[in-house]
Length: 124
Image 1 (cartoon, rainbow, N blue to C red):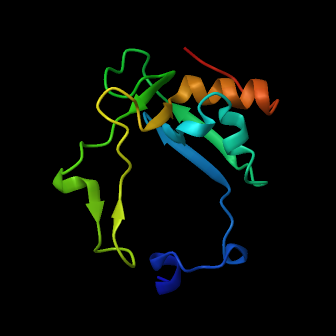
Image 2 (image 1 turned 45 degrees about the horizontal axis):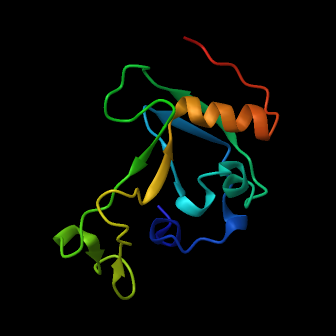
Image 3 (image 1 turned 120 degrees about the vertical axis):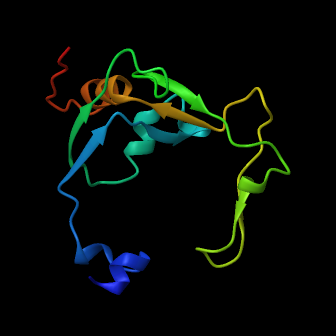
């Protein structure tokens, strides 16, 4: 195992992501990109292959889109200092405004198909 790769210090030229496998998950997009998520994904010129599996009745991770809410201010899980230099603290948008926009498999399919003209297929 390369210690640099494990620590996240590897240069981009030392690896190539050839594909992404999404098993019942979602992609988190900052709120300032929520109305145009394709612009978020366009920030990288690399577009690896993508395959996703997701159930339409998933009650935890929505198949299309939803919002992620961070814990409220003062919560123990709002900050972290063990794995990074310094302390990272999550934003606080309050209890009623989402902190990130989540796109499930169907939402990602729509972005790939309509914004990037990626040949893709959606199976029921």
